[in-house]
Image (tube, rainbow, N blue to C red):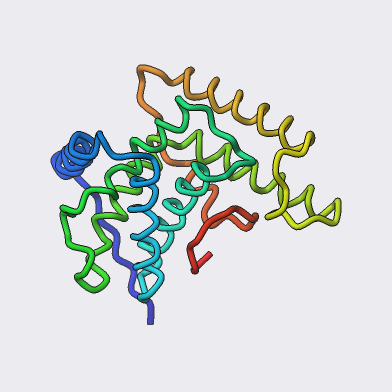
Length: 202
């Protein structure tokens, strides 16, 4: 029988995690893109080996999306946008977790919370990338193509530019007022469209 448990992080709790994320960014400031993405990918590889609660698995799916959007040649993020995403991923390149990952199940709990914070910060990036993946999936199916083989087709590039432009406008509109709530995350859930991810549970 499933058991529902809900909890709320206080401002003090959130500050604790924000400080940990900031410390990770400061300590990993010299790491390369490959090192940052590699560390986040290693977390997913290790998580794929164990059974995880849905709460954690759903957030790891969003980490998978963040990694994919950096690697995805079709999405082709500009340098500033790429750095914006990498600054969120850098927490997972810090070996000093709040809760060590080798503790069964609970070891990923702090990572799940950190992902939730990153998702809130990168709401517009995630929404735009999810829509791009869905568009690529639909167009590839309609044209009888494997979405994994689609690179920079003209129709894909036009849609990418449109979505990234909208992403920038929405982010700029909220500049100075935070990034809003995580309703885009709640709407998206698990993406059903193809993306170059690595998570087993999608």
